[in-house]
Image 1 (cartoon, helix red, strand yellow):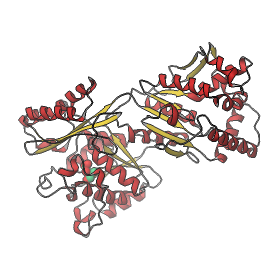
Image 2 (image 1 turned 45 degrees about the vertical axis):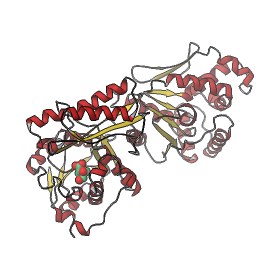
Image 3 (image 1 turned 180 degrees about the horizontal axis):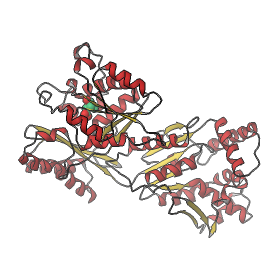
Image 4 (image 1 turned 45 degrees about the horizontal axis):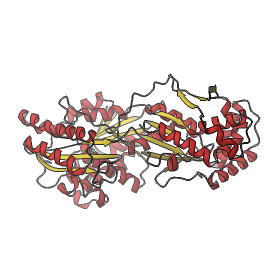
Length: 522
Ligand code: PAF
């Protein structure tokens, strides 16, 4: 591992990394299990390429208020270097303050995060802290120019603020949060645990216990913020810990909420002697639902299937359900344009999506295995017509909502985020230009041995299908207001899946839902 102490050394090392992904883990040193985990995650290969991992150690004076522990903050560069190297860092950037702030901290351009994200949780008790964090991190990012910045979810407010800063300044990188790592006694790993005496250490475990008992209360049906924060406060007081705050907030806006609803964050800061400790627990009322919609031919099925497999979520392929019904309509010789003729087929319709051990999904309708047959051009040509009938939409939406009651799935379809799962945790509108979709369709048809029309005809067909889908009176194709648009032109499938995982994890933290064990790739 290379030790870089000046901006010039960093710049020269950075130059050597051109063409390689660069993942960056900024720290204030005094490294512990949480940092180790961040470094290991940073070193994980992305689409078979091994990123270079840069660790930085800098005790940032800007984020300490007068009277805080800047002077006594633990510093041990040799130990940090050893741990960093063992955890996979390729280089350690450990600049002196003059290197990072050549004109002195007073002369520095400051980055001021939105007030709304600073006025709850740690903000009021640590004035200027997040401005100091945002300023130093932006400075580091400008020097390092990483592809990915990894931060712990333990400092949830810091992570939320830095995500926002990166988005608002349109910095070309991805921010990845990683689950809180805990010591054997349940305390969240933190450099400040070193300040605790053995007796304080035992006392400090009340922070975790207080949150755990509030969690149990919430599981038992208590959702009110007053009841949950009151319970945590009493627990801390009984253990002799002084609570700085106990708050129930929305995890993205950080605004206080009166009731735990959907996903909420119950967070606490408490003093144990002179040491300030923070911790949190997420309250999530069901396993996550991801809704992926967008126009036909944008690669939704392929991507969604792979994404679901990667996260160990069930893949609910609603398009396959409409296709299976269309296949059945054809099979029964019913006029697909006549809703009156189609409606009776919906009664007692036995439509099953079966996930096989390898993650492959099979489709059955009324006892027929139709996984391949529903992809034929004949079904493709009719599925829009069948799916446009209100009776079809209602019946299949009801079935999909029943399948999604417990969550734990990725659902794909034209109106999933708007009509079927409007409360999905993560909504993505996956799209590609008409030209790109036509190109992909021609490759796909050729691969499956079907006749390939010329590209201009395919483009016209796709444009026509878009028009039909978005102007239909029942369940038109629309991007949900809270969906993120992901244009896949020029992106390989691995890159699209990685973007989806990153978007998902912005909304569903690992601390809230670590995920079931993903299905291993056969
Ligand atoms: O989390 C930390 O250690 C610090 O706040 C950070 C992000 C390295 C900025 O100084």
